[in-house]
Amino acid sequence: MRMLLIHSDYLEYEVKDKALKNPEPISEEQKKGRLEEVLAVFMSVEKADETNPDEVVEKAVVEIKDVASQVKAGRIFVYPFAHLSSELAKPDVALKVLQRIEERLMEEGFEVKRAPFGYYKAFRLSCKGHPLAELSRTIVPSGEAVS
Ligand SMILES: C[C@@H](O)[C@H](N)C(=O)N[C@H]1[C@@H](O)[C@H](n2cnc3c(N)ncnc32)O[C@@H]1CO
Image (cartoon, rainbow, N blue to C red; front, side):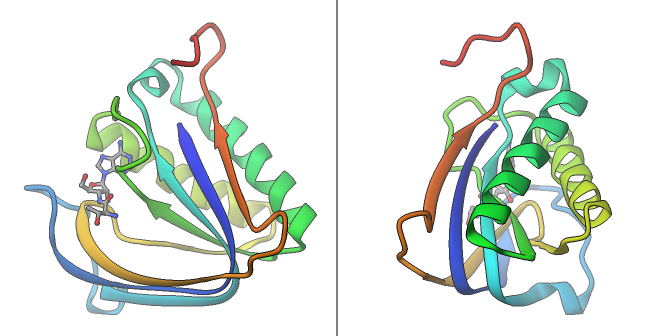
């Protein structure tokens, strides 16, 4: 799993078109989204994560919680982003991992939005620009080497 974490004044997206034959079904309301004062987390779920998705979910939640507490962000935007890795997990595994991360972050008390999975999306982001505003993390299941 590769994550790019951007502490932002806001992140907004608009669904444009299908990027997969069978994207995640979404409501009219989910075609646009915006959160203010948010930690945007762009995530590529990777092939290696398929060996232990549950472990990758928990490790991702630990990392996101750690950064959120450092930058004092109470809102998280989970953003599926297939451009941080050249070894992507299958879409069905990736979607489940991202849905579970969303659930776990809500359980941890965050306000969470998740951008729709399997679409081309326009987005606007306002990065705050402080020293911790742009971070990346790589997560691998135990026993896997980082490539
Ligand atoms: C395209 C660009 O504008 C948009 N932002 C986009 O990336 N769309 C991705 C993700 O939503 C999702 N997706 C598929 N596989 C994965 C994966 N392994 N990890 C994360 N997302 C995935 O499926 C889309 C096409 O790859």
